[in-house]
Length: 88
Length: 303
Image 1 (tube, helix red, strand yellow):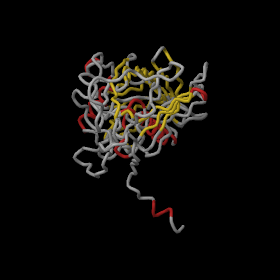
Image 2 (cartoon, chains in turn orange, red):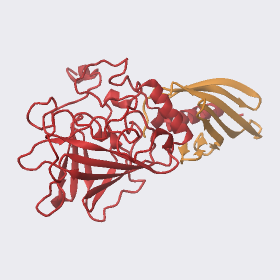
Image 3 (spheres, chains in turn brown, green):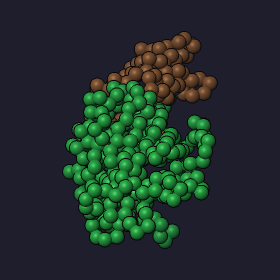
């Protein structure tokens, strides 16, 4: 994932089955996050997946992103916690 | 639907969090914050909220010379001397440097004029609201960027023209910066640069002003107390002008397309301190180290 100063870009599952991030955005007003990817179901049909979440504990090096993902009619909650270690 | 999907999403999310990590670096309470209180003497640089007017000539700790300042000193070859002169000890020291008005130079922008990107302004306001509780410097992370010149333990500029280099040594953790002065020296390419707290600096003289151009910063620090955000794109141009014996004018241009919509500038004056840190005669930087928690020391012995 990269930030060039104006656009967020990146891929999910880097590799031969990678999926490019689409419509990725952050809304600083409420720290909400949205992105989409195009996946494929078992039949090979393209399925658009939407991910919406919200950053929390902004000041922590273990800040979180929690929300929901919707993919092919399946909806699930998720919560991610950032690891302490990072390269940048 | 592939089973890997959710794992992929998780990975993307982790990356997402990582991408914003510079801005959200979390740390323990800042010195001076309600939750701090480790009592470390000369600890910190007043980390936390941006103050009012200060750093625009405020003397460092210890007495300065009374009366008008002596002229700017020069080396025998005529170059400006940015450091000590024989017979007059001391160092540069100010804790309250700030590039935002009403602090610092009269040309400084007000906070409203700083060309933040939306996320950067929101994060800055968040950090201000938190009062510095998340400041990495409060957990002993190095004071990168212009913050190098606001820590309370002073600094010296060591000019070695015969070696085409200048060192700036800092009393804070005895950190140092190396300014490459070789004519024609370029920064390493983006692929070669290893992001760091102090970046890669090249310098040159423009008349009596030392100009330092630095890129290659990591995102693990706040580059000024108060928490102005920055990203890996940060490119700083610093100008050091000894306007008289007692005053070093520090001017900086911040160019960071990741956090600001255009380059912007600010600065402050750094006074010469004639005494030791505690005001006693001497004029030497004292030894100071910030050692966060020291929890690992037990691991070093007996294993």
